[in-house]
Length: 433
Ligand code: EPU
Image (cartoon, rainbow, N blue to C red):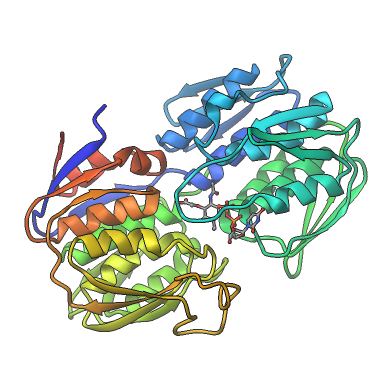
């Protein structure tokens, strides 16, 4: 399928979008299912590239993966290979989570270097240190990571930063490790808690304690379970912005309000008129949008993944807006480049603007931006770098003057459920080249 879209601005985008389960939850559930000795079923699975990649990795190991509509069943009961092929190098980040389950099963595992979005430096030191604490010998080679242990044992692990996937790796690995694991400094994103609940359904003994603390008492066997994923809060926000910026209104269904709280409040503080019901959330412009100062943070702060669409929205808000990215040191560069290419007035700074100093204060990393609105955006040829900056490029193109050609849409399709059909359905003039 072609990797380039032509986008022509076509006025307000309006309509309903029902978001399915979140991309950042489903793939972790698929890996967790390997801990069981019977099949698990995950419902409300989104139709995104990351699920296809993860299914392919699991099948290559000998895991049964069946997809039927929005349900995916994972059958880990047969014999499994212990090595993920290097042909999966860089395709997504999920392979790193397989180390724990595969070592539990076979005493040894190899996974190729994880990839994922181009959002700057993405080290795996927390994963390596955690596995080492569980008693594994871990070797990093140019090709990937090898871990070995005859038995993984519970450990005390204090994460230096509340990393989402490192937390998930610890929860998954600790579930079958011998004895007690105490995890502090853990991430508490909704997708992490969803995974913890799934592990509990599978028989894991997990307690979440006040603060960023989990206590996991390892069990000797786990069984398959069934779960229905909550709607994707990152996708939901992207569609809210797509409607709002174009002067239309997208009613987003299927996403819990609780996982969008600060995102909705931010839109409200920019002057958006919100509608929140049991059935949907929606945001529309009744007055001109106003500038805002935001810093991204771990949950329950403003998520780093909401930053890209917000930056595009800032270009259409009156006055100077500030965004300080505190989760990934290079991430603002990607949407900023897209906005810059479309003529938006955006400038990057290596200081911590508009908030307290963050971990990147002394790193010379350009991680704050000032956006001057209202910027007239013009259609451009843009190569999209990652999932979120990609969707944001399309949002920007929807309000730009003239046609844009957006290439690299495979990144977008890796994380958004049928974006071409959904955006077309909302009224955007899109064509595949
Ligand atoms: N970090 C380390 N060492 C590690 C792991 C992380 O220094 O071993 C640092 C990172 O460099 C970063 C910070 O910790 O500065 C937080 O990264 P985190 O580990 O939380 O990110 P992740 O787990 O790799 C997931 C999502 C991202 C989302 C982040 C933050 C998945 C597959 N990805 O990544 O989602 O932005 O958490 O919430 O769950 C996206 O959906 O577009 C996306 C990139």
